[in-house]
Image (tube, rainbow, N blue to C red; front, side):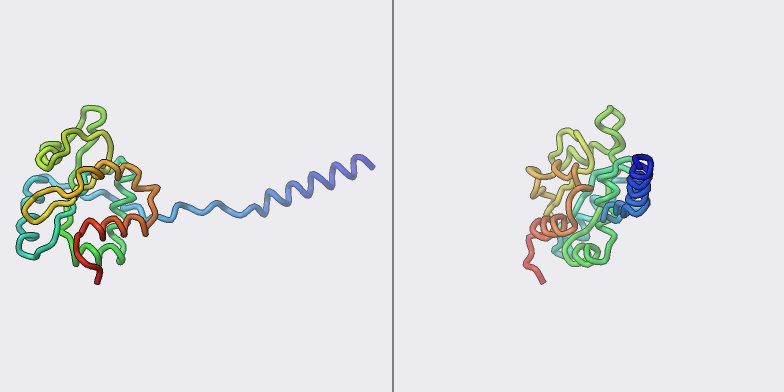
Length: 167
């Protein structure tokens, strides 16, 4: 009798394990590769020139391929919702900064040019006016948690930083 009860309990437990729903993957579209350039400073200067002609702002994303927060943010920026916002309001530039936390940083002169004296994490996101003035140095380093932000939160912040009325 006890054996039958134990067997029934074990069978019930195994059935419960077998029917446990799978845990959903994070709902973020990681980029396959974080876009990098051999001439980051030139890319930023070109974006500033385009912004001066169009009246847009420049969105500079300092990050790296090894960083899940960088690839998460880059992935969101590739989605239709974000590409529409970027096309209307921003010139986008990705700047590879390597691994600055360990002393193996790249393109840190670009970050310093716009007021990021040190890069303690990635990504950092700087929004520039067409004249090259940063508008969000107080929040630039806060993007280190981009992978845990919601799509709506990222969109709302980029919309607010664009300093243009919603369409």
